[in-house]
Length: 295
Image 1 (spheres, one colour):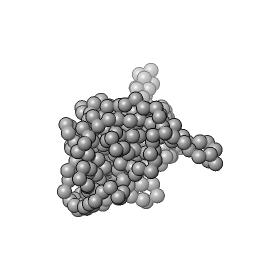
Image 2 (image 1 turned 135 degrees about the horizontal axis):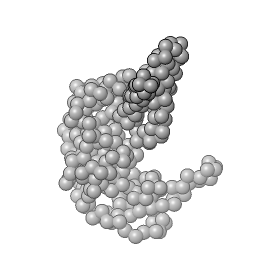
Image 3 (image 1 turned 135 degrees about the vertical axis):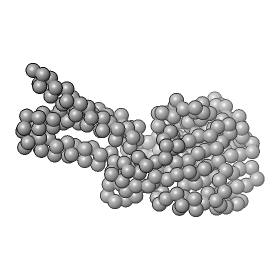
Image 4 (image 1 turned 30 degrees about the vertical axis):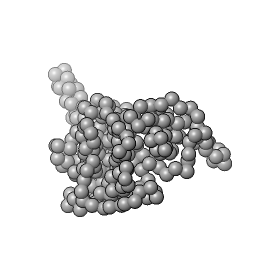
């Protein structure tokens, strides 16, 4: 009786250990979307751990080896789907502690981080995305989205818009006829409104700090860039996937690009941009396709 109870407890511990390993890999090395779905499979490694223990505890070596093979196959399959490689795990575990609290801007954890009250997602309606964003002659920020018809033969039309005044306050505006689609995107540094382009190692608002580069499934490299956004009145700490940067030495030699005219400045580093305008009481932050107003 005591032996059976001991085996039961030990089998639970082995199952919990495998489940904990699985949850650690999922929580640490996957995005928030993949993480939520993948955690639903956590009972599987737990059951596999129990199976492995009982097989060897009762001297059923062949079944035990089969259980180990199934466990390895499960982890390889799940980690392969999630893009978690040995290289990624190693690089992730060796990231300095100072960068452990850096998150993707889309990660739900930043909602509870200090300073996020200064960030306003654009557009505010989570069901829409930024198809176009520009500043009109009245220094009002106009954002619009277009429909995505199922029938590809049908043209997309503007079905949503938001407008903000120079203070960053939302304005009531429903007249989509006023939207001027021919005005370049506010983050388009190559538009004719900018008179100067400069590449320099000088950092102002975007401060790239650290790169985590690892091999993905298939042998391709992927880089995660850790960086600070030094806007007023707060410094934000983010990370994002970036074009390949080998190491910190190469990062330190990668220039920042500035597009300027008399009133506007765009500071860009990779897929990160900060827009400032002398006539506006706010700044705009773009990280890939995500755009935020910084008040």
